[in-house]
Amino acid sequence: MDDAKHKTQNTKHKTQNDAFLLRIDLVARRVSRGEKEIELTRLEYEMLIYLARRAGKVVPYQELWREVWKHKTALGESEQRTVRQVIKRLRHKLDETWETPHVLELVRNVGCRCVEKYVVIVG
Picture 1 (cartoon, helix red, strand yellow):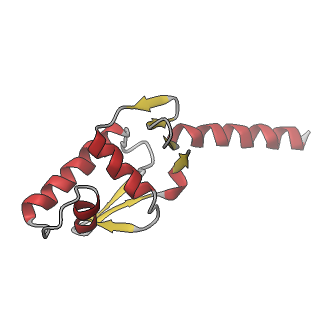
Picture 2 (cartoon, rainbow, N blue to C red):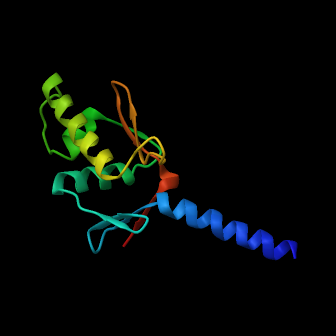
């Protein structure tokens, strides 16, 4: 009897976590969180992929500017604002609220980190 109860609790726990899980399908170029498909611009998608492939590590704004935007110039204040604005839009589209776990975490004046326990990349 205890085993059946334990199994039900595990299933319920997994389902709650799946609602927060961000799934990135590289072949279909689709992003979803729970049952909701998320539409992203090309730039937002490229940034998300770049961050997800480096999950758990802080990616500096300068690196995002160089690798996602493909700019070789130094990151000035204006460019850093641009990078932060795209991250802000992306977080909004991922439904990051106070009630949901954040897939993307900002590290003040440094960059952004993708939280690996909330991201699955397939394809």
